[in-house]
Length: 247
Image (cartoon, rainbow, N blue to C red; front, side, top):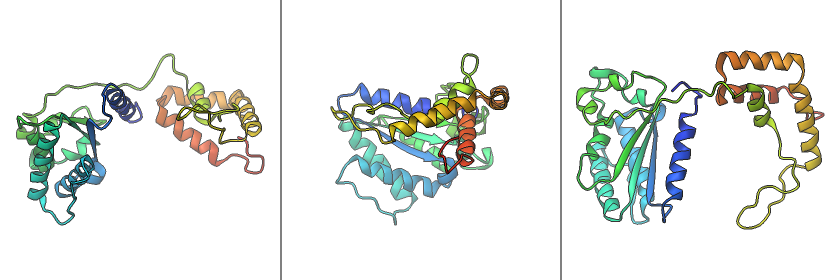
């Protein structure tokens, strides 16, 4: 899906729902990589090994370990987790950057991760998140053959979603006397209630002005996504009246 369409938000919500259905919250271990940070196979495998060490206190991460040693470590950890009835979900953000170079690249990191899934004693899945629809075609043949090619396309919110509502929700402060209950008891509001009400009233008045309505309609027509509206909200906050503390 396009940038800002909510791919990562949907994935995180799914993982939380999966965890909620399990007896043990640690039954599924999530390993996250980003193509912007871990595109190099040595860096990527080292980061996977580091995150897998959180599976148990007895596991120790070695920064000096080489590529082959880390792959062997990953294979052994996955085998131990499978014996304990635990699974691993590899989340690869900016997936197209891992496949950068196409057939000219060996794509060693992707091959190493996918090869782990071919083992009989492995309970794992790989989820790639990308804004490029041709990411699968960029994969080398040996890597492509290991993917199931199950795709979920996520489009930006349209139709009944209005930029004005998203913008207002992004900036609105909690003006209730008590925040949501946590750990069995009420928690005092972190923002002064009187100030929060003044802020929200000023926000509603500002959003209702013709200039603001026109600007939000343009955002709605161009890119009505949470990220685009969030960027606009940050811009408004940077220009707020600091003396009054109002937008």
